Image 1: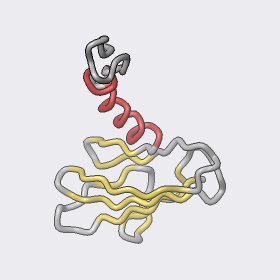
Image 2: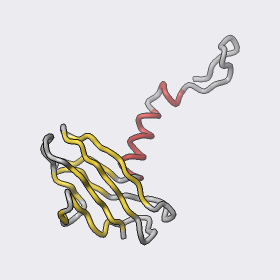
Image 3: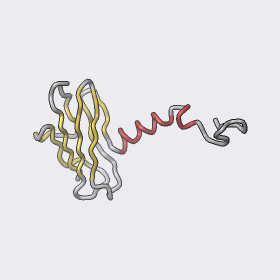
Length: 112
């Protein structure tokens, strides 16, 4: 939809917020670029970033628990999880197990 001639913002496109585009864009960025996807067993972490990005941090609320996630990219890669830590303890694979809503959930991801 585009605002008509009588609208104060004539010619302005409205589809980005009327069609769900913003919600899908957020989903694509958070789940497939930042790579933080909900699963039945926890949060899968699998970033797909431009190699020039040194890392990022974010907070994710999932099943009542708050996850503080820091992703580091010291080797400048675009994909791949080398190490994953939950509260300082190494975890095998790339799925962070479910945390209790009362527990701290500090996640550190090292790409490589």
